[in-house]
Length: 205
Image 1 (cartoon, rainbow, N blue to C red):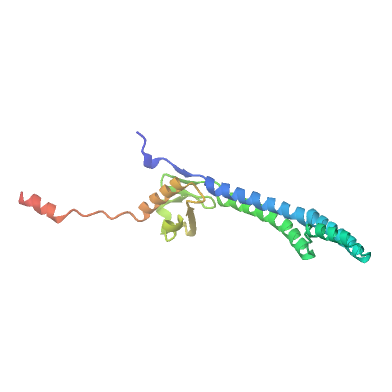
Image 2 (image 1 turned 135 degrees about the horizontal axis):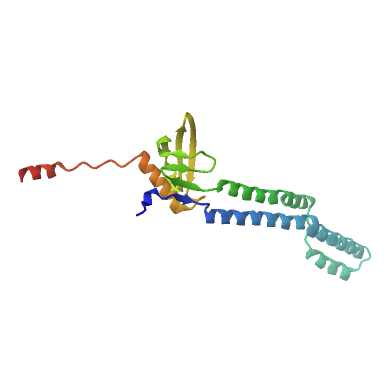
């Protein structure tokens, strides 16, 4: 019969964590393209229409053609004029949001790369060497109950390091089980002493 305690526990990248970052990246890139269209095409084109109507209206006013002036004014009011600052800001967003979206994507993939693995009392986490339980020196669980984040300090041949466990970035159930196993090893529950009354009762009998 296989001992479940000896089986590896593996936590892969959290699906919800990655999917939300993928969506965020797509939104940022899409917004950048949208703002770029406004800044380079749509708004300058609208300003051209506005300026042409404005010139025609002033010409109608000069020749005292009130009917044409009013018609052109009504058409002019339907076209929004955009300032140079507004157009410049759209262009800035066009050039800044897509790189930001790509950065969000790269960071999400990097933060959730690889896997957490606990096997044969050895913890393996991306960016760190395999750490046997015997080399774990401390657990910082202050953020665990609230955020699902714990820091595990270790010492390997004088080289100290700190592992971060995050049950949002990686699959929660196996991450929580890994943390539970590590905590039980580093801070095992105290053995409850037998009640003295039980021994006295057995003596009396």
